[in-house]
Image (cartoon, rainbow, N blue to C red; front, side, top):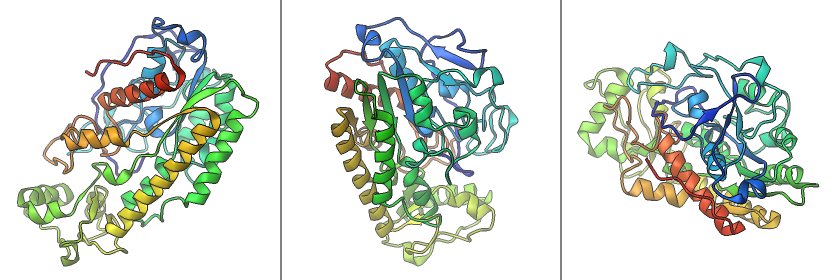
Length: 401
């Protein structure tokens, strides 16, 4: 899930001991002592497929240290299995943003900075083949509209499924589909509507067919798509109308001066629309002059658009759950966990524009979209619990930091 105007943060929590190199120092294996016999059977060879969350994208960027904090890395550690990922050199590709207010990035980089991988590490067998920006079409596609430089850097001219099968996996985790709805939601449908359900189903089924054909012993878990209307990068327009202090903070974020009033159109009153954090950059660039809440306005989601997004996600997840059952895989929906964190204030409903490091709370990084290292621990535990229930194993969860 990535975008040019997303914002990032750098809360890096150690999640295990990184030792050795698979091939050279750019490709590392996360190793821990076996906690159960599962690493000799179910998790003898683990591969994670997916998009930016699985890859370890945080705060609008990705670098070795954020890759090592992915929920997939945590699961591998807890299962005591090999975990090799396509390590990206510091300060990243692109470097994560380290200050919400200034938009400064790690190592003074920019949104186009990319420090690549070392050539010696490109051909090794990977245990994480996820690519930031990937949509449902991408696990089986060599190229697509959502392909990017990281697609080549991570996969080396192959598809996610092809790279996954190179590892001869005994267990896979798949989290794909967030990017089929996220660009539409963040742009207020200016970039088009979510991927049609029929297209999503065709893409997902193609992935599952390629992944499981001839792999009768393969086990795994499929993870449902996030209802992106609930992420803090989308906040209620009501807060701009009813909260004068928040409105001043929003003015300052968009124009540099809290006294520069950003107009909120009368059609927003009572509309219960959601405003995309991306409108801030659009206002600063002169692309839009203020906030408006009709169905045709960019950077806002009225209740009709919200309904389309939520209903689409529900349809996606119904199919993913069915696909898991058909394959004999586990299935987990992370939305209840995220909703519970939001309900108790751990994920912000209204951004704190005055915070340089945690405007969206401790569980979401500075882009308002991607989970923090702490959130990855929660996600990993939910996934582990589902694996334990489905397969009758006892992989330890991690203590939240």
